Image (tube, rainbow, N blue to C red; front, side):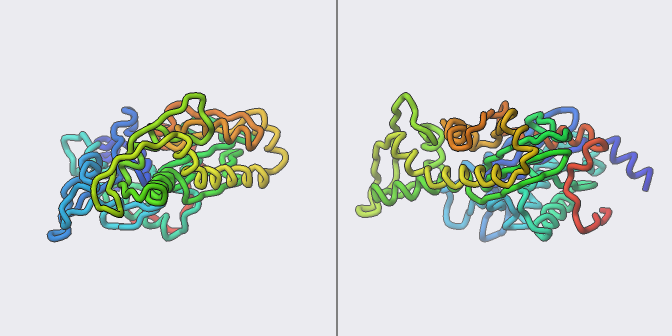
Length: 352
């Protein structure tokens, strides 16, 4: 067994994975982030064969014949389809295993998971990772990984406040002495904002639009706080009354109003987390402020809105989209020192 371990270490590069609802990012020890692809798998329903994974599969969303389905195996940050998630993980792990002796490439893998998941959901992630070819699978809560990726001093006795807004979940956590003191995981984030825009187009204009169109509008003119410059954008879709193609023009104000429901829920949960934070840590957080990470942190004016609502300084971490995977990478580089930040599971890993 010791010899096998030596061989695996010799030929394997340890891997950190941010297994997100919208995107999967992969960090390879010693190389950095090598993969950033959508968490989408295209399947032929007739043969059950996987046709494409990642970027190629996302291009098929909404454009495939009836028997080809572009499937997202993670919903709200947790696995909804175990087998497809396993195959997607295997695809990403094999893609980064550059060893010429591929069959000996059995990396240790650190995977980011939402903070509110159940033991069953943790087990599902760990099993899928091991079945996909990992030698060992470790789990880390996403807000902890995001805080490490944002270089917050998580092991200090001072409080650090992190808000990680991804595709499926928004993770809010206060961290001190290497542990999470207060946490909230809500299933309202980027995907829900896209849904808000789809609903707005349907209710206001009887226009049916797809998820990709909604996301594009959110990125182009979406905001959480009134902006100095007024912007407009065209949305194309299908008229629900005539069934014919239709194009409308919308303003940033309309889209901000459409997004306000989801944004308000996230802000309210941040305020609730502040209320639950022990008074000893509040003074640290008032000084250091709240750090935003994840794709949702890029929504225009969100930092201003949270600052206004909480009366605390807000910082958006560098490259917020990659904060979680950078955190898994930092843990990989020094796993012995940082092993206490990993999730303790109630089940043993079965050697594979």
